[in-house]
Amino acid sequence: MKSIKLAAIAIAVLSASSVSSVALADVEANVGVTSNYLWRGVSQSSDDVSVSGGIDYSHESGFYAGTWIGSIDFGDGSGTENDYYLGYGGESGEFGYDVGYIYYAYPADGFEDSNFGEIYFNGSYKAFGFGVAYTVNSEVDDGSLFDSGDMYYNLSYGFDLPEEFTLGLTLGYYDFDAGSDADYSHYQIDLAKGDFTLSISKAEEEAAGSGKGDDTKFVVSWGTSF
Image 1 (tube, rainbow, N blue to C red):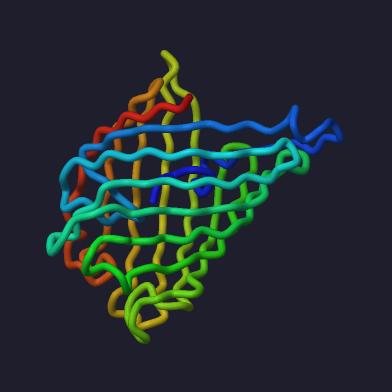
Image 2 (image 1 turned 30 degrees about the horizontal axis):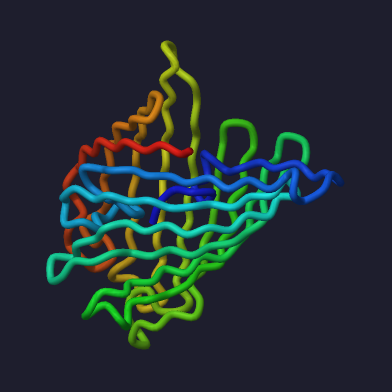
């Protein structure tokens, strides 16, 4: 799933205001392409190119909503991932917070029973970020991965470098309700400048039962909003 406001190192901090909602409302579109669509350390595009686009609505009160579509390939079939989300973000002093709900839909033939939702909370303090997501209203088979009850945790740290580069470090852990055999951790390093990002990512071999972790992945991505 795309980073949007769920990324702990890029939480949108929106301040409250009493000005009219029309003046404070904002709609923004985004497009992107990546050499490998990684989600929580695991490729969603069979280690191939993926293109994406979305649209977001945000209000200065802190409320936001949006949708995002990205191309996927799970090896036994290809299609799109359609995300729908809404939430609320804000700040208190140097502490930022973002709480919301996201629904992952896979409309392609053969993926009808793969849809699931998550309730998430992300926080930030200075350059540090942390987050947790809990799987709900899943349509996958009972007892399978991504069934209701899964938990995902992440920690991150980001900082500026010379020449307008930024560096982000992320560590994540997936705890599946279906059993510990598929639980895994992953890390990612993101070096970004402007609209381009170079990522280095590695997940444990278990990697959500895919057996496709273990290898270090190098990914180049481009994305912009307007």
